[in-house]
Length: 265
Ligand code: PGA
Image (cartoon, rainbow, N blue to C red; front, side):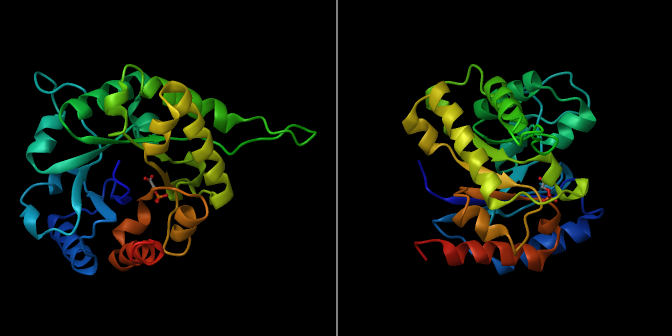
């Protein structure tokens, strides 16, 4: 597999005008460089995805969602093939906000991952528990994270073969740590536990070798201050950045921080 560290910007439903979006992209593009070890992926709203001269970009384009069918009578939906045609290489699938506000189930997410793969897009699949792990009166962990993450993962990858699974990027994004939920932050230790747990499930479902190859990222209140810890201490293969990616200088700082800790720089 490629060993590139991925830094993904999820702009969600922002900014409100094309002018602001273009400005943000221009500043970010000027502040980062194309390297062989780090890939920056920007996922703006669909409406800002067109009109790029891809050769001038120091980042890769991604989308925030896609439909599970390639085409047809599906009013309001966007096909993964349309995203591919615009130059996207990645698409976020199964973000907790899609689950929470748009009723996406594990089954829908599974169909979307398959549709993305079929269109030769790399799905960025998000999973994570809603609330922080709880403990019983004796301090024993009730393992909510494990149960939820296992179920979400198994259902999302059902039917995906060994030769396609390493195109799927997995993001551990504990919902309680997303900034819009006013979350407490997830420590690098908690992130590492989740990463190891996800690897364990992947080796059961596939093989140890594939579990090593599949990229696991962290998302949830990533800032320039905590970003390198998730990579250095928690061993994550990259980051999914929401709120902080709307601030060009903060986002560039995150990317530069990752350049600095990359062993090959
Ligand atoms: P956040 O969002 O970085 O603002 O917490 C991350 C996400 O929800 O993708």
